[in-house]
Length: 252
Ligand SMILES: [Zn+2]
Image 1: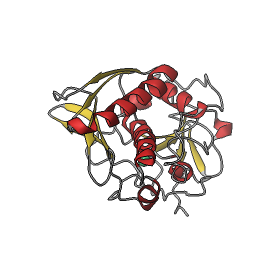
Image 2: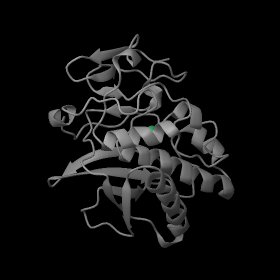
Image 3: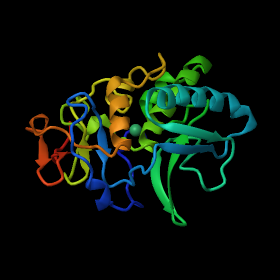
Image 4: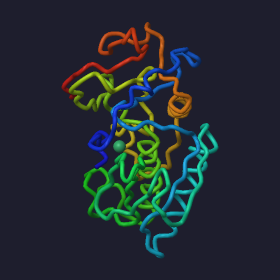
């Protein structure tokens, strides 16, 4: 479900990933939240497959795939390759799901991949009320399909909700501070900020923000460090790892 932070049931905490460069190449511009409990990316070359779309849902595939290329491939350092069917080897599997969408990083048969579930066309049984109420007509559903796919793909490539930030008006509860790393200041209009885009999900097609783009590029350069001065108050700066964690809080 879109309101729930990334699942982390089947992931392995990678200490190796923490031993990253702490040089601050893009000071105070990159934004976003990354969950270190997830299996973080190893390469910017990402294979994506479509798992179970019916023939009558191919328009949905076309619209979303074009948008994913336009945003993630053309604007960030990611290189995407798509397949119309899955053979169990792709990094991201896009799965049609009738009622809700959810992202999971899954390990299976020695393979870690992201499962990105989308609702294609009929949002009447979507779990989130905001989506049911805004994605009713075919024209609205087309917009919702693209916007939600964009957000879910953000999860699939490693980003968490911007709502987890204490500055967010829709702040979600954070229970511990050893995994949620921020790359800089709060990004109000991030595609990962559900509190922002839930109100416009059916009205206009979204784009990656400058902060989203820089966050993804930093993540795939394995450069999660930020300046200590940008990590104060409700954040905890880890001197050893040179990373900035969100302190536990109860949300709004
Ligand atoms: Zn989400």
